[in-house]
Length: 281
Ligand code: PDD
Picture 1 (cartoon, rainbow, N blue to C red):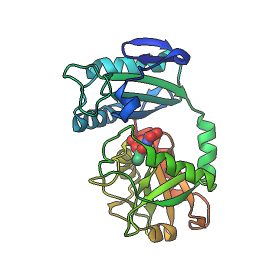
Picture 2 (picture 1 turned 90 degrees about the vertical axis):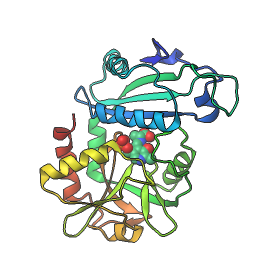
Picture 3 (picture 1 turned 90 degrees about the horizontal axis):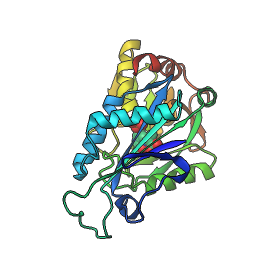
């Protein structure tokens, strides 16, 4: 495997970052994960727009210009011969002697791009069964709209999910409202077939897959309501699912050990999943 690290294509097994990189010391950086489906990098423009937003919110400089980054991403995908898989892009505030304050102006940002293959058959098999979620209290900072590499609460929540026999954990506000998963956005389908997801203005990451679902729903003639929903409402919903570049659309069949509907993936969820790849590019 080949990785791109600060201007060079190197063997993945030998790729390294300096021990005083601010990503390593402070999680002072941001990232993107894009899906590659049948050789196409999905929603690249939206991912780069969100990367730009994350960088500017944290006042981290672009490591190279946008066009050059697109070339690098495509080159990493090509060199790794990824037809179905994921691209990972990480940018940090660069290398400097440890100090919480920003390094001197002009310190170059660090950039890493990697790509790996995934198995669409394994993903389809998971979707056919559906996955389980647990709920955990929201304990993250308020700026989860920034796709920061500081993911400790997410790591702990996912690990807890795994230890409890589930695949995702939902962060819940004190009033019982569902925020989002550790690495996915949360959705329900109401009895009348309306898709419901929390507004992305605050408290969640504006997922690219989430945005694309709006296009897919329009194509399928489905209504979307952007509003908060509680864990109780989700447990009683007709269908529940989650979205992310890594899983695309994944049905959720149990919440905290209670089955959703009949415990099987819902029709609407599966039709969205099928239509997704025709809309995104
Ligand atoms: N996670 N919410 C959170 C907290 C996320 O980390 C992610 C993505 C999403 C979904 O966003 P998108 O549709 O753009 O992938 C929502 C990535 C995939 C990850 O950390 O691996």
